[in-house]
Image 1 (cartoon, protein in one colour):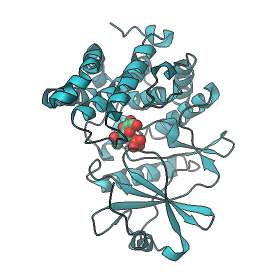
Image 2: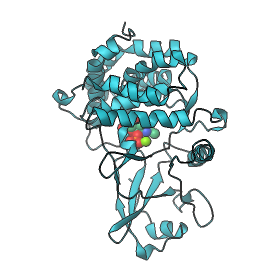
Image 3: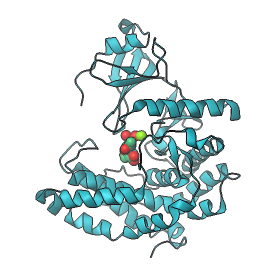
Image 4: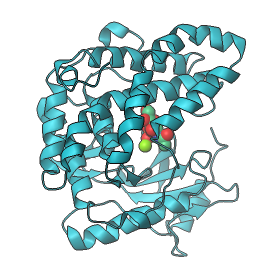
Amino acid sequence: MIEKPNFKVILEAFGLDSQDYLVQDFGAGLINNTFLVKNGESSAFVLQRINTKVFPNPQLIASNWRLAHQYLKISAPDYYMLLFIKTLKGADLFVDEQENHWRLLPFIQDSGCFETAPDAAMARKAAHAFGRFAALLSGAPVHRFNVVLPGFHDLNLRQQQFDSAAGNAADKRLSMAAELIEKLNAYRWITEFYDRNIGRLPVRIVHMDAKISNILFDREGENIKCIIDMDTLMPGTLLSDFGDLIRSMVCEAAEDETNIERIIIRSEMPQVIFDGYTEALENVLEPLEREILPFGGPMLIYMQALRFLADYLSNDVYYPISYEQHNLDRALNQIIFLEKILKEPFFLRQGFNP
Ligand code: GN1
Ligand code: MG
């Protein structure tokens, strides 16, 4: 964690009198630090410190965000997209003396989010929301968007990073992870399938962290207010967002649940998510895209398992951990999830399993 931020200076940079506000920890993201800025009892803003180890150039995020907003203002004027609040100097970000990058967002009143979908109807809504977002942006000038994190969802690169992490790991971690490495190696066909197909899919503007917890619902949990966390908005394929929807909603267990009995597949979910997502993209999807879309599910779960295990093998340099084997447990969780999901009729009938 960072040394205690000077919130007075930060708030003042955005034109807020620090005496009127109280800053509290907020949210559960793994990468950025998020704070709630309260004015008395009411929440007024969300303040975030962007993790520059992960996002070395946060300006790229701001610029993509702005581009998407400009485009949507014309193509879908009623679409609500959260925007950065500018500093007094008119910048999207405030950089403090320690080179921390801060952004301020409005707090959306009477909103809340879900860690996982409570039921199928909600899963369908969430999938539809991300599908609609991609559909509305489908005419946007892809080449003008920055590739914020090069290779972020490039499975081939993630596979290589995993292999090199295993090759360079300390003996103790390597032996702790041996069983999981072997299990994961049995799924290399997923990377091979990816390699054969990825170049055949259109490049679009996608969210790349399309989990249900990145949607703000109204207080009743019925209607969607907006999509949040646009950090990874960039050119990619729909496999990413469909895959994260599957990853975040098919089971109720958290991604670090250690009791594997609780990793239960809700069999109705994959089809419901597919239907909601593709309905919103009806007029946009190319036939091949629709055909390969289901592969996004196993692909994203496998990629997350590779990323967690690679991080464990590299002594936890990327994901924050609460205990020594946290990343190992996260990887095991995703592997069990992958094992189970591949046995589901929805995925079996796609015929990509070898
Ligand atoms: C990270 O910080 P958060 O929760 O928004 C990660 C995602 C992973 C996720 C796993 C930039 O997202 O790719 O799926 O953790 N984001 C980045 O929980 O690495
Ligand atoms: Mg995120």
